[in-house]
Image (tube, rainbow over all chains, first blue to last red; front, side, top):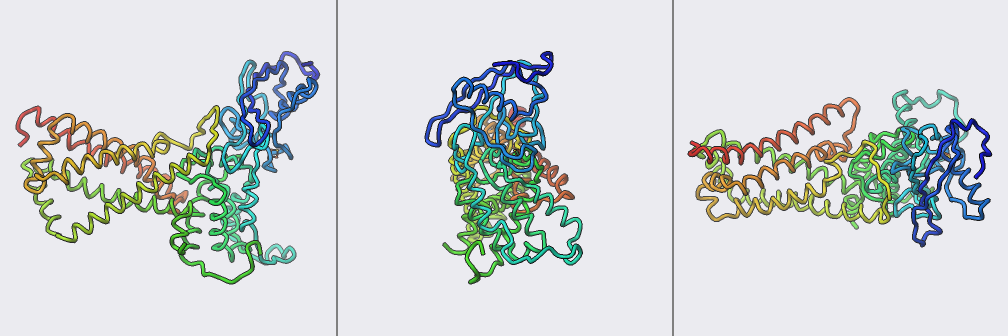
Length: 269
Length: 221
Ligand code: FES
């Protein structure tokens, strides 16, 4: 390990990482210990993992696989459980936006993947979240032709509804809600999508069909049931409220009672 | 499966049934406590015996009500087992390190255990009172006699407290499951849940404590 970062040595921290290593989906995983002697407080958590991986590659070892893309908190790719918390200890923050200044010299940090049967481990810290894609394909969109962008005031949406829909639309689909839920339930994710679209004029016509088919798709993926712990809301980096789950319950109830059987186009329009 | 079967078997449907049956069971507990408090109101036991006689006066209707109540319990218990099993299966490989973030509470995390304790006590409770041959002769006397024994009384107090823990999560949770979550009402609902849990727990616990204390002081009336 070299002091290649070249920052003030006085700031540098010694960090012990205990990282979940698992070679493949059907392999047994284990926690592996790595010591980093020269971590800058200015590094992001993922940059620290990059440094670890450079070292592992230089030493001829297998680097730690982890998901990341935008590294600016908007794509939902990064997905680490740090010391038992999805996305780590910072509220309303994805792990790519977590910085090492949150930690002190000598800290030991545990890093694990999202854990849920519906999110099987692909390798190390990477899990397969295609269950979310399949739920989205079941109705998380507007199937009608919405046409070209309309004049700004052609369809009026009251400000409070637009705000609530926007709050739900902030979901980046990272899956932290599932990771944090004691039951591995995906309710908050699905609720965010159902609530987002049901509250806007373009999404409202299909709200019943959407609520039924998205809940059905969620159940088929083997997520747990929601028992209202609300750990999801506490872990969500975008602050999605469980109010959306209550809304989805209402949408579902309404749909179960009033949705008429139709002979419309196949799922996915 | 039928339309209603499909809806009820879904994860949201199960929640809704859990919440609804929970609510109705709370309603039963409130009426049950109302009846039981007659034992303290009138230490001679006459008021309580009149209340029991009044209920018995309904004849076959009482049986229908009791069967309905049993159905509520069965549905609630069946769903509890099913949800718990499914939730355990949804994460077969668990976390090495686990930290709560502030959503869950002791009440929410122990729902299955508190429920199981309440169920176990319910069986004992029914055998002690409802299905005791002496019950309909002089219900108040049987209750006093039973609850004067510290073992029985402590089990009753324990069950009352566990009901309080169960409802500390259950009451508010039932509202959420039935779709009631509104920033204007949430603070009130949260408080109401705690008040209902506290009042039912202390209300029921007061009865055996009263008989235990009055038994140790000699004649209660
Ligand atoms: S990498 Fe895109 S949100 Fe973290």
